[in-house]
Image (cartoon, rainbow, N blue to C red; front, side):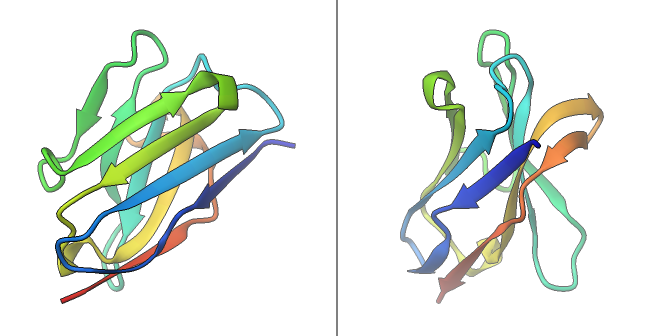
Length: 119
Protein backbone atom coordinates (compact mmCIF):
# COMPACT_ATOMS: atom_id res chain seq x y z
CA UNK A 1 0.00 0.00 0.00
CA UNK A 2 1.39 3.35 -1.05
CA UNK A 3 1.52 6.06 1.60
CA UNK A 4 2.70 9.65 1.59
CA UNK A 5 3.08 11.12 5.06
CA UNK A 6 3.69 14.83 5.57
CA UNK A 7 5.28 16.30 8.67
CA UNK A 8 6.80 19.55 9.84
CA UNK A 9 3.74 21.74 9.93
CA UNK A 10 2.88 23.93 12.88
CA UNK A 11 2.46 27.46 14.13
CA UNK A 12 5.03 30.07 13.16
CA UNK A 13 5.22 33.85 13.36
CA UNK A 14 5.14 35.96 10.24
CA UNK A 15 8.60 36.21 8.74
CA UNK A 16 9.58 32.82 10.09
CA UNK A 17 10.44 29.55 8.37
CA UNK A 18 9.29 25.96 8.34
CA UNK A 19 10.44 22.87 6.51
CA UNK A 20 7.87 20.30 5.50
CA UNK A 21 8.77 16.71 4.77
CA UNK A 22 6.88 14.08 2.81
CA UNK A 23 8.03 10.51 3.29
CA UNK A 24 6.85 7.86 0.86
CA UNK A 25 6.39 4.20 1.67
CA UNK A 26 5.07 1.22 -0.18
CA UNK A 27 7.16 1.85 -3.26
CA UNK A 28 10.01 4.04 -4.39
CA UNK A 29 9.15 7.37 -5.97
CA UNK A 30 12.50 8.27 -7.42
CA UNK A 31 11.23 8.13 -11.00
CA UNK A 32 8.07 10.23 -10.64
CA UNK A 33 7.32 13.91 -10.40
CA UNK A 34 6.50 15.11 -6.90
CA UNK A 35 4.70 18.23 -5.84
CA UNK A 36 3.32 20.29 -3.00
CA UNK A 37 -0.14 21.83 -2.90
CA UNK A 38 -2.00 23.79 -0.25
CA UNK A 39 -5.59 24.57 0.60
CA UNK A 40 -6.61 27.52 2.71
CA UNK A 41 -10.03 27.68 4.42
CA UNK A 42 -12.75 28.49 1.91
CA UNK A 43 -10.36 28.30 -1.03
CA UNK A 44 -9.57 25.73 -3.68
CA UNK A 45 -6.46 23.61 -3.53
CA UNK A 46 -3.51 25.51 -4.98
CA UNK A 47 -0.38 24.21 -6.69
CA UNK A 48 2.78 25.34 -4.89
CA UNK A 49 5.80 23.57 -6.36
CA UNK A 50 6.91 20.49 -8.25
CA UNK A 51 10.17 18.67 -8.87
CA UNK A 52 10.72 16.43 -11.87
CA UNK A 53 12.10 12.97 -11.38
CA UNK A 54 14.51 13.42 -14.25
CA UNK A 55 17.15 16.05 -13.58
CA UNK A 56 15.34 17.56 -10.64
CA UNK A 57 13.97 20.55 -12.51
CA UNK A 58 11.63 22.60 -10.32
CA UNK A 59 8.58 24.75 -10.89
CA UNK A 60 6.89 27.18 -8.49
CA UNK A 61 3.71 29.14 -8.20
CA UNK A 62 4.27 32.88 -8.45
CA UNK A 63 2.92 33.32 -4.93
CA UNK A 64 5.84 31.41 -3.40
CA UNK A 65 8.64 31.94 -5.90
CA UNK A 66 11.80 33.14 -4.18
CA UNK A 67 10.51 32.13 -0.73
CA UNK A 68 9.84 28.38 -0.99
CA UNK A 69 12.21 25.66 -2.17
CA UNK A 70 11.28 22.10 -3.11
CA UNK A 71 13.93 19.41 -2.90
CA UNK A 72 14.20 15.65 -2.71
CA UNK A 73 16.31 12.95 -1.13
CA UNK A 74 15.96 9.86 -3.26
CA UNK A 75 17.85 7.72 -0.77
CA UNK A 76 15.22 8.55 1.85
CA UNK A 77 12.28 8.50 -0.58
CA UNK A 78 11.42 11.93 0.76
CA UNK A 79 10.55 15.31 -0.70
CA UNK A 80 10.88 18.57 1.22
CA UNK A 81 9.43 22.06 1.10
CA UNK A 82 11.53 24.77 2.72
CA UNK A 83 9.33 27.78 3.41
CA UNK A 84 10.88 31.14 4.30
CA UNK A 85 9.51 34.63 4.88
CA UNK A 86 6.12 33.21 5.75
CA UNK A 87 3.06 35.46 5.85
CA UNK A 88 -0.49 34.95 7.04
CA UNK A 89 -1.42 34.29 3.40
CA UNK A 90 0.58 31.06 3.62
CA UNK A 91 -1.74 29.64 6.29
CA UNK A 92 -3.21 26.44 4.85
CA UNK A 93 -3.16 22.68 4.91
CA UNK A 94 -0.19 21.55 2.85
CA UNK A 95 -0.32 18.34 0.83
CA UNK A 96 2.37 16.42 -0.98
CA UNK A 97 1.59 14.50 -4.12
CA UNK A 98 3.43 12.05 -6.35
CA UNK A 99 3.19 10.71 -9.91
CA UNK A 100 1.77 13.36 -12.18
CA UNK A 101 -1.18 12.25 -14.30
CA UNK A 102 -1.35 15.42 -16.37
CA UNK A 103 -1.83 19.05 -15.35
CA UNK A 104 -2.31 19.23 -11.60
CA UNK A 105 -3.67 15.69 -11.30
CA UNK A 106 -1.56 13.36 -9.20
CA UNK A 107 -2.03 9.71 -8.46
CA UNK A 108 -0.89 9.69 -4.82
CA UNK A 109 -1.66 12.21 -2.07
CA UNK A 110 -0.70 12.65 1.52
CA UNK A 111 -3.15 13.44 4.31
CA UNK A 112 -1.92 17.01 4.73
CA UNK A 113 -0.19 18.99 7.45
CA UNK A 114 -1.44 22.28 8.89
CA UNK A 115 0.69 25.40 8.63
CA UNK A 116 -0.51 28.44 10.55
CA UNK A 117 1.29 31.76 10.30
CA UNK A 118 0.46 34.30 12.97
CA UNK A 119 0.79 37.98 12.17
